Image (cartoon, rainbow over all chains, first blue to last red; front, side):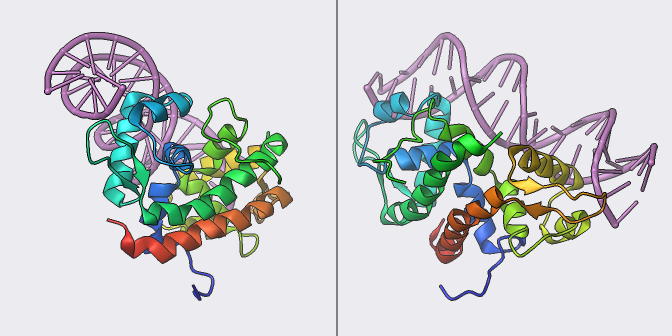
Length: 107
Length: 107
DNA sequence: CAGTATCCTATCGGATACTG
DNA sequence: CAGTATCCGATAGGATACTG
């Protein structure tokens, strides 16, 4: 954590691919949706305003593959954040907090 | 700043549109690219690895319209972050810092 | 209920060429 | 140099129907 102004700006930066994973609306919505605790597929579908089954499935798959979310052991069980996923909550809530605070200032 | 677990999770939340603006790779890259100070179009184009003129123009337009970036007064001048844009740097660097720190843990 | 698979449109986004 | 405009293939993403 002592990197001196690291540059996501550069394409070859490994953080870039990570950023591309995280800098996605549905990913953020789903992760935040799991912040309060594990939830079933249908719970996510209903609460995540406007997401379609297709995108939910796809987003969950990506997040599971990336290791941010843990797939339920049994079909129909709860999805939950992995430790890595939990570690992302800090930065992410900072971002969503900003979004809420400044939503009215944006055109 | 005292919101009790606000929910970007919901679609009708005003923060959602804000999130959709910010949760975009190119937007993040350009904003971070302007973090160190104002830069000209060509400077952004060269340093933002892999971005095309089209996407740079489009992204800049969106960010300017949203009020996050200030267009140069004279053609060929420097683009710079607005106060609002600067206020976003905190949350954003938290996110990019996370991306750098955990890049190797992701599949 | 929990997904998966298919169809189809809209947008993304690079390459290229053009203008002031 | 600083953009803008057009062409076009690739992907996003909703609607719907289907399976266990």
